[in-house]
Image (tube, rainbow, N blue to C red):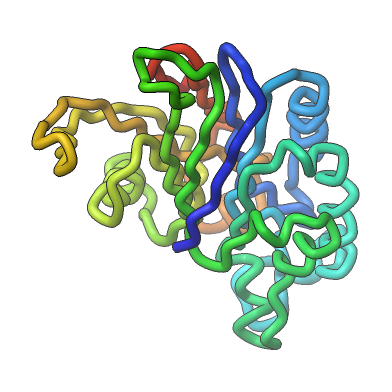
Length: 257
C-alpha cells in the first residue's frame, strides 16, 4: 500500500472518476465511451481521475484471452494509453496496474503500467499494489480548526468475485477490513456498484468516538458484450460508470451512476 498526498486547489466540490477495465486493445473495447469520459474530465473544472488497472488488455500467448483477436499489440496499447491520458495527466490522482498488465510482469518482469506512468511523468502517483489517497481541498474554516477538508480513499484493482452480484459486492466491502478509510474503490469485476455503510471511528487524541459513513464504489468496464465473457457465459455488464462527489465546505460524500 502506497500513501499518496493529493493537495488540490480550492473548490466548492470535486468529482472523482474511477476508470478501470478499459481493456484497450481488446476487439470489444468501447473506445468511444473512453474518449468521451476523458474529454469530459479535461473540460470540467475540478474533475479528477483514478486509473485502477486493466487499462490495457495485454492478451499474451500464455494467458486467458484472445491474443489473435487483439486490435493492438501490447506495445501499441502502451503508446495508446500514453496518448489518451496525457491531456489529463495533471488531473490524475493515482495509477494502479491490474491483473491484465501483471501478465507481462509475471512472464517477462516488465511493469508496463510503470512504463506508462514514467512517460506521463506520474511516477509519484503510481503504486504497484494498492494506494491510500489523502485528498485535501476546500477552504480553511474555524469549524475545522483552520484545516481544509480531508477525505481518505483506498484504491485496489482487486481479484476474484465470481459471477453473482453478491460475491462482487463482498469483494469491495471486504476492503474495509484492511484499512480505515472514507471511500473504497474496487475494480476487476465489471459491475458498477455504489453503497454506504455506517462505522464507529475512534479518535485516541480526543478520547472520542463518532458515527461516520463509509462509501464503497465498484467500477464499470468499458467493454461491449462478446468474446471471452460471452464464451464463459458471463452476463452483459452495464458500462454506466460511478462518479464520486466530495464537498469542500462540509464532510459530505456520495457517488452516483
